[in-house]
Length: 282
Ligand code: SF4
Image 1 (spheres, rainbow, N blue to C red):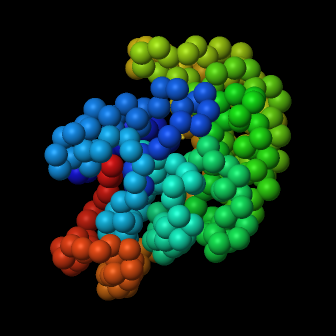
Image 2 (cartoon, helix red, strand yellow; image 1 turned 90 degrees about the horizontal axis):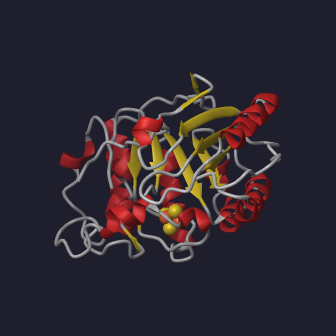
């Protein structure tokens, strides 16, 4: 099943892992859980098992089949660094990202301790790549601020903060080695409010520390109506992107085959899957 991503700061989503469990207040109204649970029990649907955590190895090689360079949000429907994901599987995801390097990847987690430990060990090869951006969620002071310290301690080429849903005034943040900040309010039924002065404080900190700033949304029950302008302006800044040439089709084919022979027990026919102009998946 292919879907366009409606997330403002990305082009496509890639989910070699599905499902997750809640870890902090930012998870309260998890959109991924709401979406996945809608399809629990629907036979043949990718979310037939709802939000139950599971690996999806048949999705592993997907970016290698997407010929058009994209910004890809990795695991929009899960958390790559959740305990149930084995180290070797995370290394496989990172290997695909390092190989299909004509894309830009956005990896976001709330499990920042594991992110830090793996980026400084088994994922060193991927951490150094500027087309892979590593980020942590910062919804409040108690849970969010320690995650920033973990991210800063990881040897990543590009680091970002997703300050969303912003639940309180998080004060002055340490932005050393941070390249990008996304800020947004919660949306949907029961959305917790976000105050303008909290957002302005973060924008001003980004300005002072020369951090790219992306204001995603005010949120609320009517997200579209509330919009995403801050003091009359739209903030759509990104870190600098690197552009690598698209790998020749035969090399992609070989890479897909290698990944699938290792991780997928029942591989599908490969050549027909190889060339696709774009990709969005759940
Ligand atoms: S970590 Fe992310 S995907 Fe997992 S429950 Fe929390 S908000 Fe949802």
